Image (tube, rainbow over all chains, first blue to last red; front, side):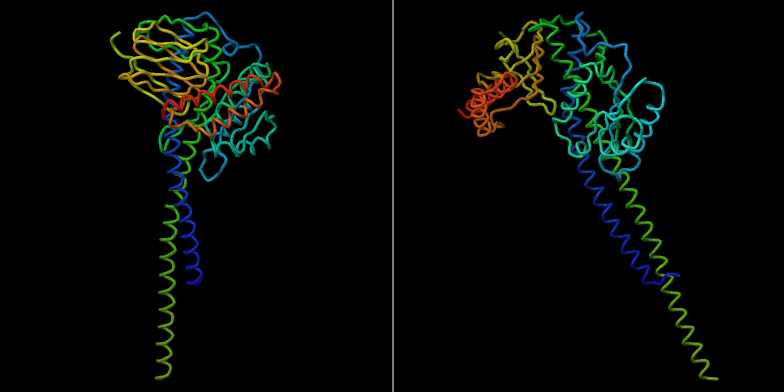
Length: 286
Length: 135
């Protein structure tokens, strides 16, 4: 049986851990607020772009290389996880789904673009070839990162290196919910025009529709990639918050249990001493 | 011309401007475009330059780099890769950019020419907009 001093030491150590998990939860909460803010701020741009692109695509017969489906089936799968751990099953679930997709015969030949250190480490050990990895971008995401990765994907697509690009990531829904999303990035699927209630607008195009399309499509890809990054980061912080909340609660329960045990041990020791004193006194009387 | 135009300027990270104005001038890629309420619907790409909007006889300016604009009779939506108000412009950095770009243009090779020209144009636009803001 552990001595009461050992138990005290354990209580102190659990309390120390609890302080750390509590601090991490608070940091995650602050970061989550910022990440949510970014999602909201990016929305007007994405919304307008969708609308304009939809009307442009619906009204012109022009096509563009980024819109064309090709025969081939060489694909890239962009897998977005976190850089850091301690966020529950956040990255693990994505990687399991990625493995499932890669093992299926969905694509004839596929390479992985690993975003997040967790993904990079995972795919280094797997037989799937890795086309590109980002190991420190997600934890320090800037406004230029989305467009940079999008540019890389577009270049690979335009040069004929790949025929399709897909993205697998966590979409942030709420504090306690995020869902896995598998989305095609390239070729671009033009957003569908919403119900035809609004009268069709016949635009003048300057310089011309083809140039506009060439300008807008890469932007659309950038927005899609950036949105995925922002979503994933927000979901990661939410997941970490939940995980740390649970850890803090567990630590509390543990402290309660240990305190109870400590009191019991202390009482047992006192009782034992009393018995010894009493029986010692008896022995003297006789 | 009666009525007003609603102008919205957004970049990928934020909404820069959202106002009811009387007139807008856009730096179209083929030249400046003056937009008054009731304009024909128009989609245009934008170059580097100043965006001017007039409200209550006061003219305000933004520095714009690339993007495109959707013009409707009562609304102008600008999606730019960069949009800055005069008070946001770092004048010293812009002056430095201008000097660097000018120096580079004298010796640059063809591959870098476009990039340097764009850098110079942006620096000049920023300085112009910054001066208008304070002037």
